Image 1 (tube, rainbow, N blue to C red):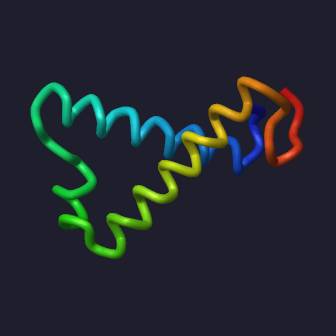
Image 2: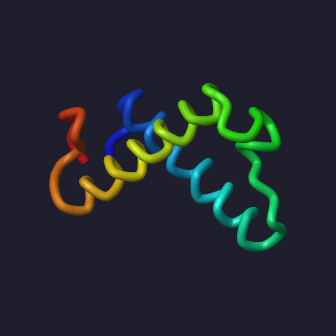
Length: 71
């Protein structure tokens, strides 16, 4: 992924998702639900965005950045 704004946001969200899963595994603390509540609309939006970011990150292993910037 390049250095365009979309790529930076995708990397940030994927990192937040990874950090959250690490906290769940190590300390049984879900940062998203702690900050936003258990399955509230904002929490669901964060989970959806993190999921999309993870998918976009996986796509970059196969092909060029999905937003069109160069690697």
